[in-house]
Length: 251
Image (cartoon, rainbow, N blue to C red):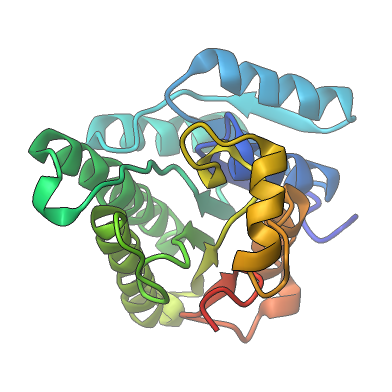
């Protein structure tokens, strides 16, 4: 429970899914969590869950695809809490369909959220950490992208492969400044994103029995545990790594 005691941890996309689960896990391990995302109501729910669990958190809404929002997010975090020690850049979106049929506006929106929405937070997090003794950054990529390609996911795969490459390049550039940067690449996790259109959770359970070597989706707790390990002193020699968490789907 002491790995993150006294640490200020920023989680983007903290209003649901892996972001919320990871925010809760950081708080349970002693961190003060800054929960960020586009929807104040869902962020408020995350903060309430953390506080009911005895943790400390604050919601600061932002759109990670907008530089002014991200600058304000980092500035406000530091002004109110005195530091930014760890960041989990988790905000992301999914859009499917064959490459030839991909709507151009949907393509632009996906790039804005998944690539720009990782680049901008990382840019301003690094700027702060360089001047303040270092820190740790974990970015959310995906097993679809650098590790696996599936029909109908070309645009999403392109954005997440870019996140993986961006992460590893930034890691090399910044480890000399004491900033340790890695990525986590989840496969199917127990969120709505892993459900096919019209599919129930029971349908998904049956599908995963035969389609995944491990035979099931990952839990939110398993995804959060991977992020916390990458952010913790236990992984202090791990730099520029893209950790795949997918039950051997891309093995």
